[in-house]
Length: 343
Image (cartoon, rainbow, N blue to C red; front, side):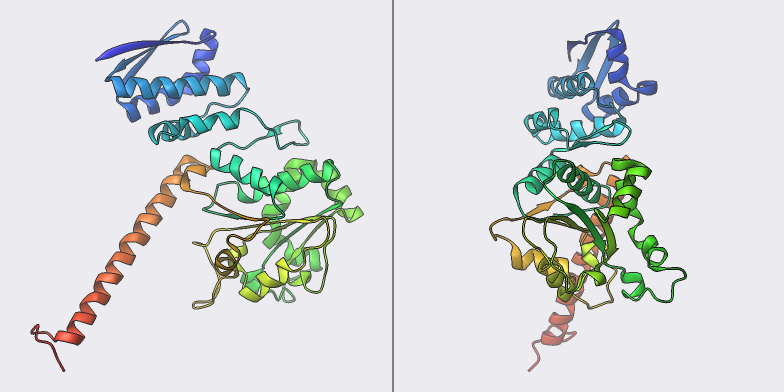
């Protein structure tokens, strides 16, 4: 057992690191098997050497985040601990700088994970970017933030947001109201992101001017989109034909971001996802980048990460059982129940 100390700038800062009801420190103690005490801003960490070292690395980076004005939440603490445990703590420095844009309420939008930072960097550097990964990783939100930032810098003249309305088979006519009322339920996540970036008034003004356009994917056919920042959301629900149609809408001085989660496809059974096919066909083409998020990039409630991991484990076990079942059937067809090869 050893004990090492960590000096904070003040007792208040130590309180921020500990979190409400010591929630952050409790997580660190449980993960690394250490004990942590606060002595008027001087934090003492005791335990086995490896655990103490990991806990101190976590606290040091959390202090940097606090100095940058970031919220030190249990979720953020878990992410830092995971990066430290995986030997990737050095990559965390990339998060210390870089603001994507400012919301209508003055809040800076930043990448919260290393995966998110790599994603926004790829969007900045490439014409077409595929953002693929589980729910809660910020795929759509960050793409909208990058679009708003490009619009403010006048790098794009308009923002076009689209997604397939799979639940209605792209046929929205039976829904009540005008076109806007019909498509609202499918495009609500895009509205929410724009409202946060621009505010209700800014959003309404840009919609009225035609600077922002939100429409179902079916309405993209036949168009050429110049000087635009285009986002295709929920792309796992596109067919191969729809995906090709969308990608060939790209015009001069335009950028496209395609987001989706290939584990949540709502297409009819046996129908190939256009996103899955595009990832295979377009991988390696210059000026097209593919970014794959992992469960570590989930920035929603920390329980979401555990749910994703549980489903992935279930999928692996199910796949293994199916393979075993198939192998047994193949064995019985070849050798019969008695183990003798049949001819």
